[in-house]
Length: 232
Image 1: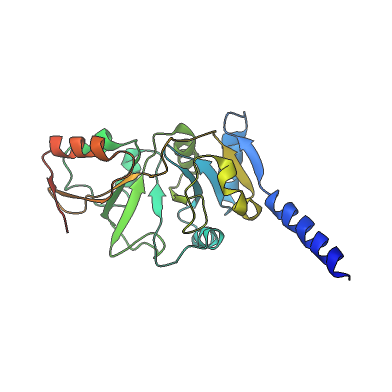
Image 2 (image 1 turned 45 degrees about the vertical axis):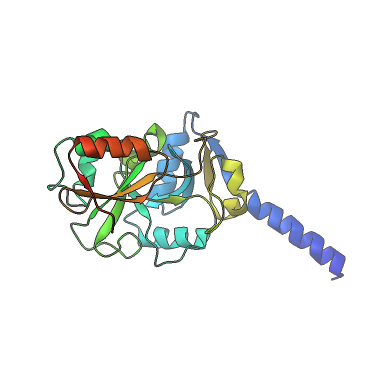
């Protein structure tokens, strides 16, 4: 085959792959059920959150989680967060008895990721040194996905590793060809900082792992509950 024809064929093939993902507005009547169906069958989908667009899959499906890492080209030594639909679900996966009463319900739902001790053996993709990061975004669509699935979601930002985070779904078109669906919620946030990451694994202490978009508000809440900052 002549070189020019081969190049044209490759370009068309690439365009076809990049168009593979179905772009589904989250306001659509069947959007939520479509997302649940895809998650139940082991797929990875792109969804909006209260901070950035994310890649999500069933957190109990290790094959799906491995697929997520492959799509993102993420180092497998770096765990991803777990997204829940409701606060009581967090207690099935993590130790929370040491936390002040009502702290979780004050911080969540919101643009924060809380690092807590795991209550059971969790796959390496979700756990680091016995700790896991948990999220309940202040965003109905992704919370309803988790509730409808009946299981938490593994969640990471929707971009190739080391590339800028995305606040619109068109900003991660490079990976659309690896996804069955992209759920479009418009622009998610004015900042690309992502969630504020807080380690709450020790009684009476907190450690800010990443300042993120909710840094000041989170500090105000933590100090109101008399937690002390840990700097190392």
